Image 1 (cartoon, one colour):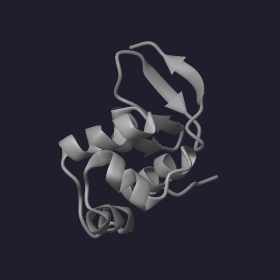
Image 2 (image 1 turned 90 degrees about the vertical axis):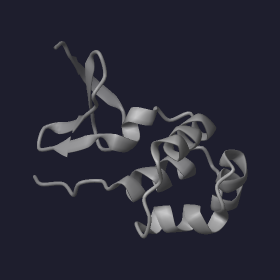
Image 3 (image 1 turned 120 degrees about the horizontal axis):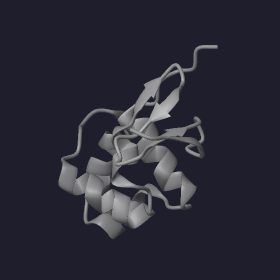
Length: 97
């Protein structure tokens, strides 16, 4: 079964919603304007790595998760040990490099 790939904006929204934050709350926690955050979630702008790091810190979601690549086998993350995640972001197997 083919599943749609998650875009950066999908991951950003999912991370924010996972911790129960509104866009306004995340904007305040990261120092990013509400307008910019809204555009990131709509895919109209792309944040720099420094902003993604701030979002990661505010949501507790690993920085690398925002840059994962979806594959037919699952989602792979570039970490020392590669974690293969399901679409809900839960680890279901660890691949040794």
